[in-house]
Image 1 (cartoon, rainbow, N blue to C red):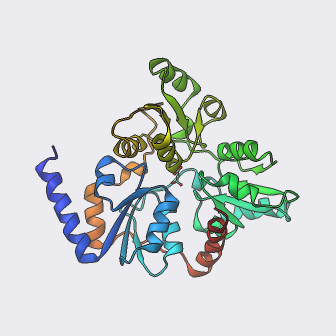
Image 2 (tube, rainbow, N blue to C red):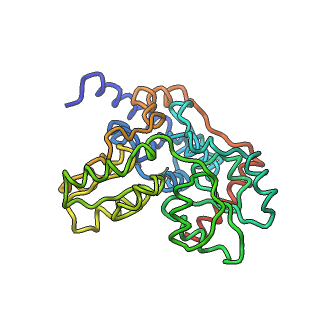
Image 3 (cartoon, protein in one colour):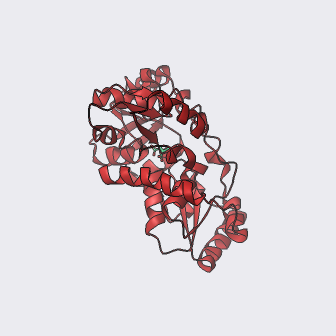
Length: 307
Ligand code: CIZ
């Protein structure tokens, strides 16, 4: 049962959404309240595609900054707003355009693959983007005689390297919360408590966690795996918001967090109250400078062509 105050905010959001001709997009890591008010939930790329397709004038992006930026890069004519402009990503901040330029100068022939968890400036310095669901396809699309720089996540890089049998130049960034919080011990303990459960973990997890998993998949991959698998129980190694998305899509199956403290603090900055304020005051606008946007879009478009 929702409180009277929550119901009032929900009514106000619905009314303003209509008035503003807005659409609300929420990442799989958002709280259940925010996921429930959204028109679409998904991973960052699915949401950016929704942003590009929608006829809505205003896009309220409930996620972190680089995701709203990606939506704005693909939909420059729409107003993209994020309900809290402090919702950053420590992994994305581990590489800057200047640092990438320095690395490129040491490997002038290398193709630069950047994970979507990067700023628009870093994407603009890249040849092609990838997500955690298509990094293997993206790397396989590059001729085998080419050197490849892969930024910024070292764990996704190592995983992609192993799956493609390619040697990649990995930037040493990592997701401090939640993914590197999940330990091999967590997986072993969860497996003891739920011996029949399948273990699915995100490729941003540490190698020793990945080695214990039945499936190493992005959030959209987790949803697909849980749906098609005959298993009825799953141990989930990613941000705990994902458990709500999984349960909603698979009400008869059980999902257990590998670590219930695997929380991304900036994802959780978005609240219903802030979604309401964002719609009321049209804040905070996310806009990428045009010359950067055009170069960043090329890297995203190249990814969309191969995946
Ligand atoms: O790209 C995304 O949405 C992220 C950060 C995770 C995932 O696997 O969906």
